[in-house]
Image (cartoon, rainbow, N blue to C red; front, side, top):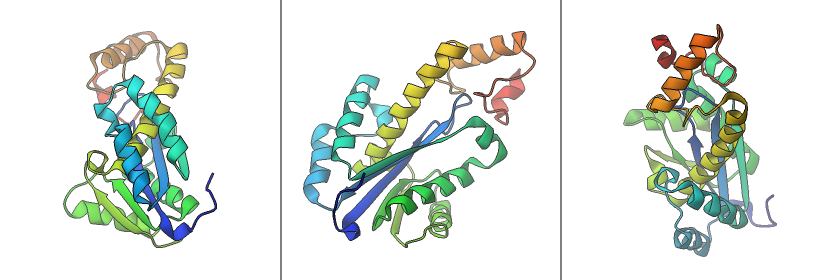
Length: 212
C-alpha cells in the first residue's frame, strides 16, 4: 500500500536473505518511505540494524514496526529451481529492478554483492531495467551502513525464517541451510544416503553437493 503522497519524495532500501544458502529460496525485500527525516529517525530509535546482528525475536518485533512505518514494501521469493537455472547476480538484478518499477522511488539504496568497479556495473545493470530513472546508490555491506537497507534486510530475513520453519516440518531439521552449518551438511549427507534425488528445496548447482 502507498499512501497519497508526492511520489518524488519516496526513497527505497533493497536487500536479500538466503543468497549463500544451499537449502531454501532467496528472499529479496524492498522497503519504502518518504524523505521526511523523522521516519529515518524513527527507524534508528527502534534499533533497526543489519539483520545478521539481531536476535530472531528482535527481528520479528522490528519487522512488525517497520511495516507500520513503511509507505510501501514488498518481498519476493526466488525458488531453488529458478536459482539453478540462472546466475544469482542476474536474478538479484532482475528482481531489484522489479521492486523499483513497482514503487518508482526517487532514490534507491542497495546492498551490492560486489566490490570495486563491480558495484557500478551492478547498479548500471539494474538501471537498464528500470522504467523510471532513480538514483541508485549501492555498496558492499550497505545493510550495516544505511538504515533503509537494514530495514529491508530485516523484512527479507524474517520472511525467510518463517518459510524455513515450514520446510522443516516437511523435511526435518536441516539447520540454517548454509554450507557453513554442520547441521546442514549432516542433513545433506543423510538425505543422499537414503535418496537418489535431491529434493526441490536444495540448490543443485551449488558446489557443496559435490562432496556427497
